[in-house]
Image 1 (cartoon, rainbow, N blue to C red):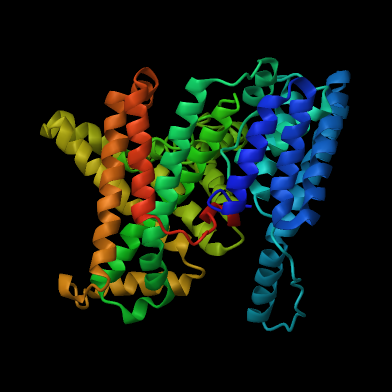
Image 2 (tube, rainbow, N blue to C red):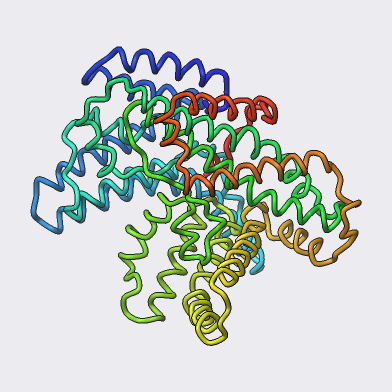
Length: 476
């Protein structure tokens, strides 16, 4: 079941009525049943994976809290890690490593048998696996008390708004919210609906509208002009941003309506002046997870430059692999790891020199930095979007050839103009929102809030693509 489908609108209407009609544990039970129904609508067989992970982590965390024996606590943690990472490794990475081993052995002159299997990737497995792992690790570290109520814990693991594509919500943020009484609240409804409509604008009106151009470019880059390929690359950077952040907006808005607060997942990342800043503004719930549970345990920036660079690269390589079982994702992570290292080694000293010694105006250096980060991010996105290195190289070759690099060689001019116009509207609203805080104004002035909702709905209705296209991050 996906947000931009008719069945989901029916589902959320029924759920909302029942949710506010019930109280206490009956409401929590409804949340759990509805979440399992939501996920099972796609393929009920994979509900067993969520249930098994939930039971294992629930029992393990309680047992860890009951003992002070470090050896036993560590064994219990490894049980949890083995189950969760075992599921993730088998369903998401088995064929990837089996095929890689087969190709490597064949290149060495051997004739290995095909060890790959027909495996369906469970939707959202990377997200809920990281979510429940963070809980177990926090209990092991003593940063969080084990949850004794299985109903609440199971709901935390599977709550449907963010179950499939995040944001990755920490137990320390989610579980305490069960202590609050979530009565119907008009302010939360207005604020939540505004966020939901904004998410639909991003996904349906913009991301899905430009998807056609992007798909054409990546399907057959060799037949298109360099200018059209460049347009496709630029549009993909916005497609993936708006598709993913749109999902996060809808998830955050839905949770807010029902009384729960989810963390922000995106903060205008393409206005970042450096890659450290970029990863504080892009997929924040994942980047903070990797920081807290991988980068810092590896040593973080302790131990000197070499170890800092090593830890950054390991973190980004595994972050790339998290996104998918493909070497192009790993290389995407390698590029971002390299960007972070170069920023520390070269970028920061150059920035200080340009501003202090050369006297470059601060605003000019900021603009150059933003443009540089955006261009290099697009370079990495080419590998992220490509199913193999050959397709990525085809994109780069077309860009470098400058073949028919002119406006007249670009087809679909109206669709492209529409896409950039909608992107322009979106960026203007996002940037100006930092100053005017539209959501707060909508809460204080209901008439203005109603007008804002109407405008968003009109934009979605006029420019939306209603094909029920799945969100990009469902595949991760």
